[in-house]
Length: 149
Image (tube, rainbow, N blue to C red):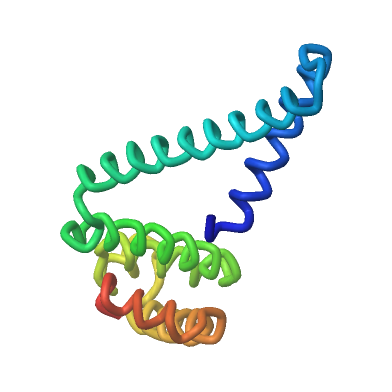
């Protein structure tokens, strides 16, 4: 076989089975035949397993045909990274970013936090600058796609 790991596994398993049944063999020829037969059967089992695996994989829709799955996975991972970065912000900035991510505009955020709209704008600008420093460029590119930053 071209797969060295598979060859080693089959060889090892064949000799383990020989060792476990060593009392059943009276001659070296019987043991030799057993090892060859066991190795052949293990290889056939592997080929059957690969065939079944291939059949099931062909029945699954390719990931490329369902970009929503990949997009959802990417979004979830990106949001996890963003959430971790947000935890490093000061409390008020953290709250402004969370409210902004929840769709609130600056006026609504100012009312919720009882601060001026200019304070919200300044803190939001500083928070985004901090997040840009904390996140690498690839994360920022993905975030900008999903969040329109």
